[in-house]
Image 1 (spheres, rainbow, N blue to C red):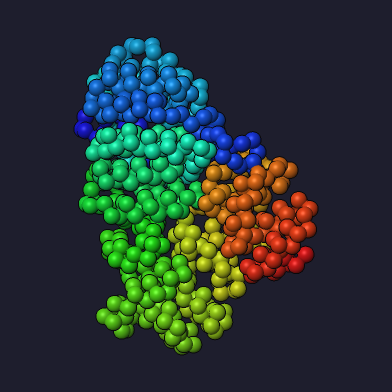
Image 2: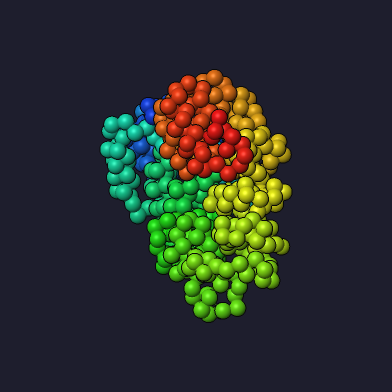
Length: 550
């Protein structure tokens, strides 16, 4: 078996596990304990410290080196400190089976892992490996090496089950603990397997920040893992962890030899959402050169990068990005429009000149918003004639713009993608269409929002809410959806969740609307008045205006 593909387990390599914080009801989101979720199953527990991780790391490195007995001893030491981690139990079972295929202890360890989580995929695959090893020993090893569990999954595969979206508790001592875990890993910092072990550990124990740090190093040291890490980027964005997704996407596009992805699948830079998130990360930092470098690597036109900078609210950077194109090709009407708009020189002729076909949504949507503000919706509609919307699923930046344009009549409902229609329904205080909520392209944050409006008390809604609960401090849609569900179930909304909602209410109308409803039910007149004033400043739909005035 080739180095770098020995015993690579799916848990942290290609199918991230959501680690969510859960404290009873959905509204009771706090920071006092840890719960792990695998394939929809909540596994409450406590964060396990340095000794268990040190043993797990020793085992992972020994396993990669082919030292199965050393790996087994280390994993068993880890299990003594953390007996309820199914990942450690799976590795014990796999090592025992490899050393002695008749070892009953292998079956027992895998059985214990499945007792913790009956659908834990690495345990099911390890059980199949042991069964095949006993029936056909020579075939088992090669089949195991070639099985999909060891290969990065295609980036266009369904990642609905791939979730990574939590943070570990932030009580006193946790920063020191994380520093010690990093220090242990850095003792072997030149080995990608060490960082991969930290990624697995951080993911299964509920620390997205630590997992992101580890993934950045995995990208650098293990080229064959880049496609799988690209999947994690999509999953992070889907769960509302956009900042984390952008950081990992940036590392993927900056890594040398981007097309070295183990020989399997497309490189991450060719995946549209991954490429755009990487560009967004550089835009947020105002790093013009990095924006250009990442756009070039991903083969994104300068107009796309400029449009995203514009949509992010940085017209100066957008102007700097688009000017070389305007200078080199004065006939490029789309580039000229962007340059004129961000320079404050946009004239009404933008809507009367010949329509530009195949206008990128990064150009068309910000341009239509600027034209609407300057000349009205009718002129803005002409800008988008023949172009449609074509917003990528999961692209929160452009989805929000599309919804904004729909609220003022520049876009019609049928022109919107499913996630934008779900958002628009929320802003109209209507239930979204069942078909939109079931749309396979919908990301998890929009699915939760839709379910909170359609089926707030259903168990499926509650389970998805638990999986995304820790993203409430990072994403306004998740926070608003969790409040919707808590209110429908007559559950208390925790102080941290309410604080998150209040922080978003100044800029997000869906969060502002949820805050009005929350304060109304609490019965505090001063709080209700303040929440209504926040909503009034953002209201665009008749329903929002009505709620802000009641």
